[in-house]
Image (cartoon, rainbow, N blue to C red; front, side, top):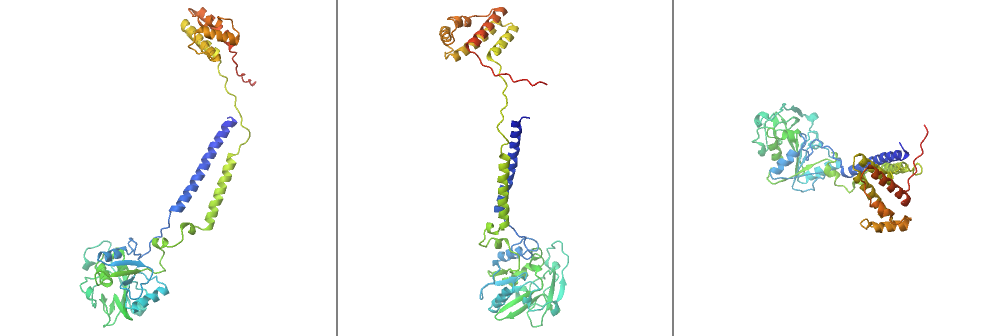
Length: 405
């Protein structure tokens, strides 16, 4: 393989490598600009449609005419809204603000049985555990699905309930004169505590409001009765600051995607770009001067014409072969002495005589001949070759020297 071919192959390989690196770099930038982090939703997320999410509760309340808002901010005191805490991940400041909201006349429903907002009535305070049945499929019979009936109930909106399904919760101890509902003995699923001018209602299980259990028994009716006793109310789902950021939280800040990228990432990209430039320069450097390869020597026009004439002679076309030989000579002489090919032979003869010193009438006589047999064709071919070498003086490329073996 010649050095030129090797260089061409190396250049092609370098182009492929450089193209691949450039493609990877461009794709990395595109992914960096377009891909956004989407955190997985946590249990009791009011935006989550997963079985442990609470999207079904929001849709149910909105279907009943309520205006539902999920937020991390406690409503201002005196707001006409019912606050529900599905999972107590509130920080201390949020709990203080929520108590102040209730003291100002607000209603707060705390569904998380482990929340301190219940007033300390946990298992150590006399509560008992309740475990629901295993229901892989909905029975479409609220009374048969329920594992906790109404019992003693002081809530008028819940008196007609057929019961609720409590997957795994607790029943709090209550006094005979305290508000209660869904009871067993002296324990109730619902406890109510008056604080200031408002109320904090505690539930024994927050699982009753997740998507997979909301449709069971009268769980949805329980949510409607506690959160929107009057049609067209407002409900605020309070998400604690301890919960993971949602997609909306990630998109609500002032920082752009470029601000969130660490400095070392930009340094890595800069070093990658510098390495690419160095690699491209090293692959594009020449190894030496340009090497020229010898070009194959073309066959002289006279030899081609003679060979064509010989072939036609062998085929028995003497007249036709002679015409081809003289026609090629006529074309070459016209081109060499700037004479139009359609001009009379006398004009061409005069131009060749003046320019090359041939005898007057020599060219016209030769071009006017016609071959009748092999002998006359051979004579015409020889005469044409002698005139061509003498007048046109064709230069040939030297033959390449043979290397002794």
